[in-house]
Length: 219
Image (tube, rainbow, N blue to C red; front, top):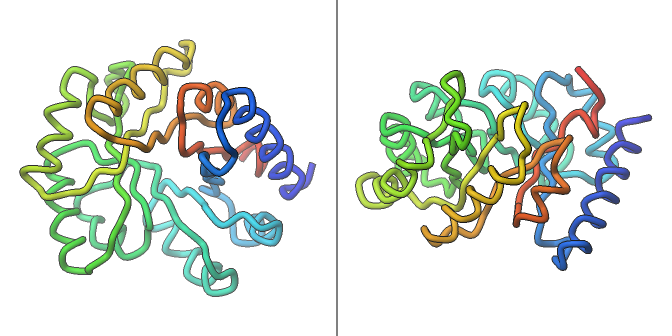
């Protein structure tokens, strides 16, 4: 299956999941996860009309996206991988959204750069709903306090929450928990769901789904 065919099939599945959940297709943003793919592998998906892409690393995105964005106007880039505080300056310059806000040092660095560059970057707090030691993210018990600190201490505008459920667990309870924490903190955006479970995430209110292999194939 070509990349464009993969995109069309994912679009069909998203539309069906939205209809099943009683939601409009416009309620869900598809982030095509293009990490590790070269520009020539991404071009067919751009040609097919996709404009929102996700990358894991600042340096990789910096190497390939300026030229692609110039060739295909209207591209939005989302950073969906962990961000080191010392890369905040480059990340704010390059990305339209950052999905991995998870610690005070990063909040401080982002606040400084957003002010310095005058860019309105959409920010998501990353939750570690499975409390997995190897994973980044704020544990659920600390989420409310962290979101409050983002707003009150660092002056950041938080758009929503992001989660990656443990691979060996059913995703639904993790999506439900993320939606619950978002609702009580007045957050309207939910970045949750990947190739294997985005239809489930849409049932639980996902506004952004991060889909890579179902579009681009396996790396």
